[in-house]
Figure (spheres, rainbow, N blue to C red):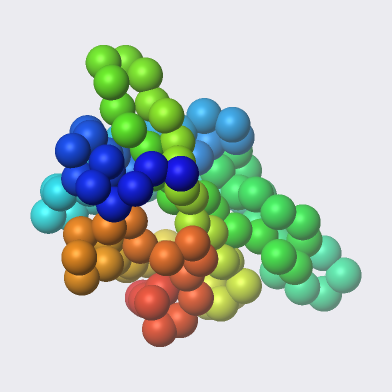
Amino acid sequence: MPTAEELRLRNVHVGMQRKAEVVSLFPVSAATAEWEFDVTVREVDGLLDVGGPFVHGRPGARFLYLSWGNVDGSSFEMFRRAKLMLADLPAEADEVTVDVDLSDESGMPATPGYAPPALRIS
């Protein structure tokens, strides 16, 4: 794993993982980053379940991956990813906005997993 100093010197970006590929990269220094995509929603054994190419995990433990990596030309070398847990999504919502901090107070990539209060859902 790269040291903090190595990370500061590299071209670090964050993107959303779609299946095995990380797409829609933003520099971690960007003021904002926005990803927009659809998920399928269905009921499984009386519980809400979501799916789609951006959704990972098994029923009852679904999540999205935010992935950090170094960009060199067209190459993306992932060194960290974080799970955005979907269990707390409101079942009745047609559209959901999730806000997270992509870096911590020192400018380093944020924690390896998000749940409230670090994951803010509206």
